[in-house]
Length: 187
Image (cartoon, rainbow, N blue to C red):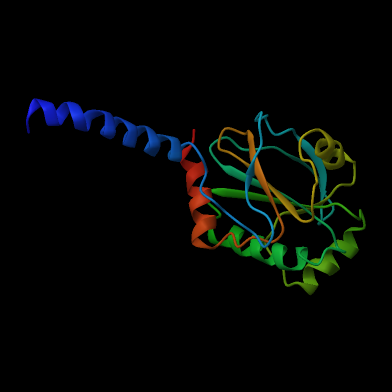
């Protein structure tokens, strides 16, 4: 290669590398029916949430360092939640070593009603909670804005809220896997 061809090719190579790095700083596209994963800025740390597990015990939920946390808000009246909750349960079963999922019922504190609803959907092994103390409602007004139902917030490995998606996306799809992998690689 001549010096001239190197001088001509160098700016194009540099531009290509910059474009490649720019693409890596944005998460891959992940869509549900009428929405897509949307980043939030500024990113803030996930607050502690005092909730009641559907088994009756109190729980304080926090993001665990080095793990992705999905915080899902749902309601028993929500049609899309009937699709979303089983998907999240399947996701939890498929990736227990790398992912925490917190499903919070927003419309009732009646644990029997919540358990009955989840049983009707055959949802098992999903960490489901009631917002018995208003902690999630308080956090939702400050950080987890509920702009649709269901809505799932992704909390990255460092405990910061990265973004959200409304509706019932297919977390087990290649696009869902790419999004989760992207945030696993971010530190």
